[in-house]
Length: 279
Length: 358
Image (cartoon, rainbow over all chains, first blue to last red; front, side, top):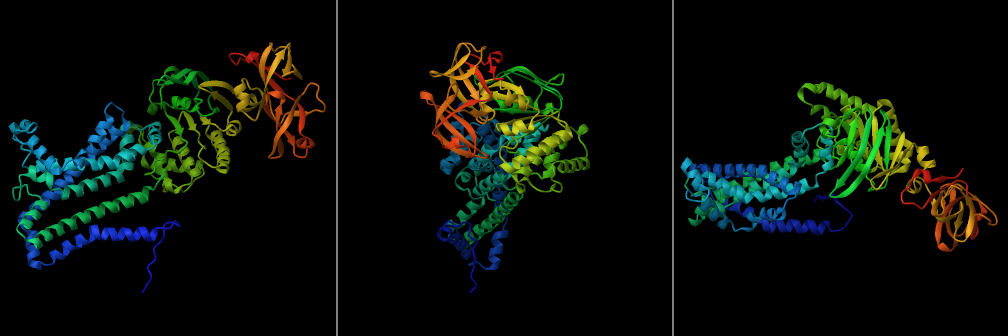
């Protein structure tokens, strides 16, 4: 048997123990349950599988889930960077309170968030009433889903970008200014490129959280088939019908798509890290 | 470009970092701002650059008032201690950045910018590194790139904030000589901040010694070393020993004995006597000299440095002796400074009250 060699990162002992524990832990918590899903899927024959994953209801939900999640994560990138900027660059009364508020979407039970958002954005709600006369409905439409996903994803971007912005060397910005660059040029050409790895991480976290989100969305979505039905809900329906292989098939497709997207984001990050290094 | 600093005052939250500082810098001059940390030297440099604005006073570039101009409008080259390179850009992109961000009408073509970057890399002796990233360079190379980047915009003045502070001693010495050569080749008016007196004295045309937000003395290396105008400058530049003395009718007394130094211009009262450890003569038998007990002796390069406790006041002074001098092994040594300087006790260090040895 060929002996597999690991390059030990350090002479400090502990590599075998920590590496072994990592593999063991990831196996029981993450990898084995996921393999279970794929095994369940294989209980279906090929035709049944194709029928499920090409059904119009499934495709509509797939598009909605990934589309709304991507749009929400993109929006969170813009707003999250802005909030991180305000929290790190300015000092004002109540800054710490605002900083703590950012984490609330983590702490709140998602069902509570969903119900609150529905109440606010329903046509009779505090905010919804201003949109209703314009013919814009928010709750029970994809817009409502998007709002719920923005809500639950916001902390990820803020919390990944904030420390990078905090540690960013002010002298680099000053150097840019002495070379004649305007403030906007400095932000776009000097600051933002350095935030890209953190932004990508925040995007990936917010996006994957949004794809898997269930609790807050089902209240505001209205759950109309082919219109406001998300993939996790479709899985719950199949489970309620005791159709476990179909539920597993949907989950397997979701997971595969998510995994590919996250892998691509990771590769982009690895590339940017290799390129820019750590100065 | 001539640089005039007129009555600059700078306060941070009521704390005054600079008190009424004035300085004239001639065109093409290489000036060092020298002082301990907290002396205001970096603050002054940042005010010249426009990275901070003075609380009061004016800064003139030639006959133009630069005080109200933003940092972008001032066109200064600034080199930071920790390089502040753009790590996501190649060396060539870093150097070309200042040209690339110019408004459309004034911007050279990409081809011209590339050529200029290569020329500057040649000047800073790093040819061929255009495509490297800052993380692939050594500290000394990074600082050269930072200087090339600052020179690319053809600055009116070149400002360097502790440019060699983060580098090791050997690289520092090389870069020092090299900066002098670049300065002679380009002729920019240059101001650099340092806390390293060796660097300041060796490199600069004139040295500005600063302490606690004030300029103590401006002069050539010879001026500040040989004719220090204040006790601070005497103590800060080069090695020095000091002794508290009493002045009576022009005679200097240490405790209850005369030390054989006199100056008729000195007012009665107390004062501080400064001398250089290496500039003393040993005397036998003590009538009019400084005598002390040897506390310690250590080797400093080619000399032996002996620490003496003087009199009953427990004042410690240092003197330097040749390595093989027998006095180093004695327990008691008497000496007289060959040249010295007396600063009579006074409220302000005034030039006319300073008394020098012949």
